[in-house]
Image (cartoon, rainbow, N blue to C red; front, side, top):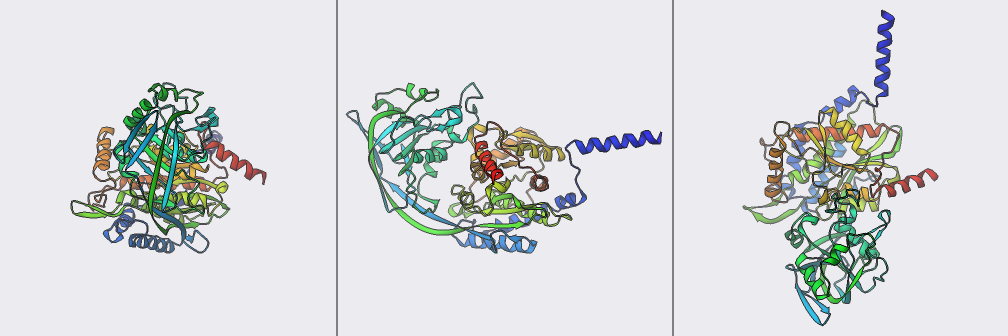
Length: 556
């Protein structure tokens, strides 16, 4: 009887060890439990206070923010992440680009005049007081995509010098019945406006105009009208951005139809862009445009700290959260400070809590943990873009990026919503961590809107580093998804990028923030003690980049 009992216990131990489910150690549990609502609230209350003036780059608010983060990391005992410094300087240029009020299209014995903001918006990234485009020819270039894996080239057969590409928003899969055509309604990076601007520049075009439509864009024309005018920040480059198109802009769908009519074309031309084999079509129209620019140069800071690994110090897991918000702006109900408590003091508080949790481990993790609070996310993910273009740690040795942005404040959650679910093997880590908390995985409910491309993890994805962006936002623990959707919609409508995004002491329920922060610690902890590198899944547009980097690493 004793022998049978012993064999049963032995079998159970073997089964557990082979199941792939590692038992949590007491040290890991204690570290997770050190992440508390009280500590989260303290950091958010500080960072989102009026004293920090909305944390806009190049302001007193920036200086207070980066100083606070440096001092906190020092007090936790974290090492400087950039040599002997906790800072990575990020050179930026601010351009207030003012185009001519009218954009006149000439050709086919007709003239079509477009009004700035009403019919078109346009910017230039080129760092010059005046940028001119003379007699540039419009060419319809489908979706503006070059995707070898889909045997797709919307720019083929044309010398683009002296020409401006007119392209559709999103990608050919949008609205298609076939989910394997591109990715169906799930937007690929080829559908994102940033890609379209980049590709037009690679092709050597003078300019690019994207045709806006609400559904495939995922937002109304009003968002374009406000987001592509006035002062904008860009990374400073050695060539003053002269490798970018001279004009990057948008036109309305109604204007696109007028252009087709003037060119002697019909909407059938736009439909043809959805079919394989499409080739660009010259429209026989041209335009000229001059920008008058006001330019200012400055330097912002990424804040970076680390905990060196005990066995694999040259392999890195990077947590990111953007520290910046909108600063001081137009008053709303008498309040002009855009505090950014949720967006993104919550994310910064989370990575600080995770850093402190790793410092409290009784047994040190094997890989190096990096905590990167980036600047200028609100101006176009610029701080994280600068980091991946000037990495402090080799990208091929970077195991993963775990990004935290805008955690919710209305309690514990049943779900973990993974933005870009299906992209990488980090989904599997998220699934295991969620299961420990009795939560379920919920894929991005609006993949056609391209949310995967709108936070700092995306810049890591672009260079091949597997990246995860996940948080609870679909089903609150004590209420149904409809109730939860109402809370999210109310926050978007009333508080997103508004002065009212501020901590309301006594009214917030931090349970969901604590859940998500502990979960992200858990994922990082699992990764930190492994020897494998997660990858992108088959079909991801980022897999080929990672595979190439890892193959080169193996050959060294």
